[in-house]
Image (cartoon, rainbow, N blue to C red; front, side, top):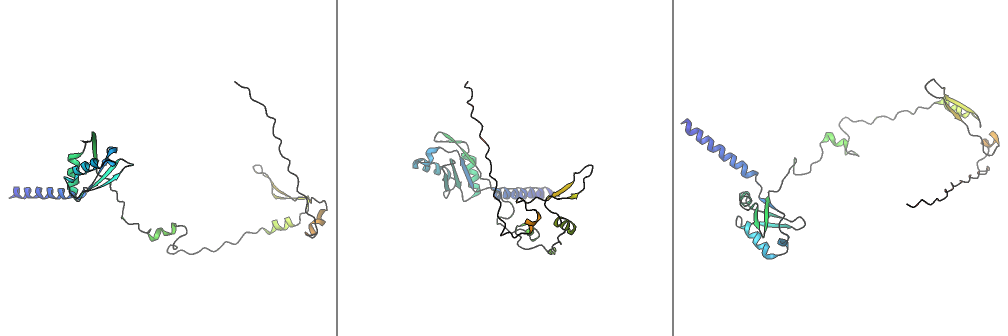
Length: 217
């Protein structure tokens, strides 16, 4: 009795394994590096298709001339497996036929899904802010009134030391430019419309060096 149960269990395991193998097989083959004449000569096409239609009369063919490949689609995965077993590396029109199963890779869902809600804030601009997000108030600008007051008291030609020099850092000194018109501080209080615009200095072009012919070798 135990022996019969063991035999029945082994048969069930073989059936399960067979089912897994059948469902994992693909119902298509790729013929690799087929003869170039196959894409132009109709009689060769008919002979080529007859080889595979002997395993599945409803087999369909897709020719890719640029890649020298042919895709053969079967209605049954077992027919594709048998055709690959019997026709792989056989001779056709003086060349060897190589048959492979196409690779089918599925990563996650076959449909494109939107990102998870907790990761939508990474999109720029975000579709919606994350839960619990609140806008931060703008910081108050820092204004150094002492510095502004000291600079406002400066006149042309004077300087103001912003940072005293230390043994490791230099001092920072602001120099107020003198008036180009030479009117002193009175020009600063004059009406800008009455003050003529100073002429722009002419840019002196750099002279091109003389050409020296190279020594021919």
